[in-house]
Image 1: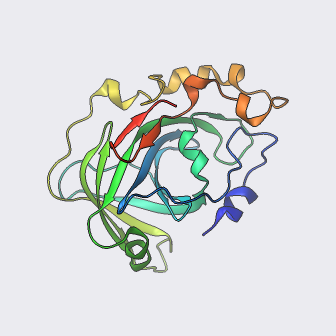
Image 2 (image 1 turned 90 degrees about the vertical axis):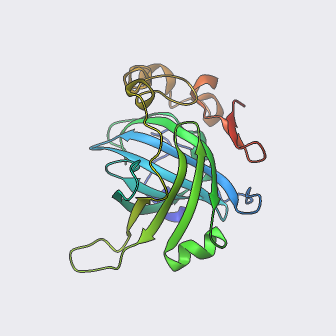
Length: 222
């Protein structure tokens, strides 16, 4: 997968998603950025993204991240996204690919627990620990074998070790960078998107996700 598919699906004169490009890797050892974006498109789902090899490796989670030990949920690998997408929160206009509201739902540090993350993913199994603002604990991504009735990009995300801390109803519907709800983000769509403005001015500062400090393991406002 590469950014070619990402760019081919989008008309950047109509959407404020970042064009982006491959960037230098920002891993420190086996630690790297993760973000989860709550995405109310045709169907509500969560997008799980890991910053590896200069891009965001991405999976769509139709039912979100499992939090109970042993629970398994589908994770469909999608096209790589540019690293700049880790900052994206806003609304993709109707008529565009993925149209709908996007919230920066969680962000933090992911640490691979067995081997190097790139090699682990290529082999089809990544055991990792998340230290996010909402999610903390251990999970595993496992690639499923292709079959006639199964997508070749189908993976499972499994909650390993122990249960994760429960997320309150209020936290479930709050951005970790702006504190806004999905409804509030959607309501500001008309104010924050103007096609005749340059990319850097399309989103006000409060709409940009916090950069993650890999040394301290927490998100910080830029």
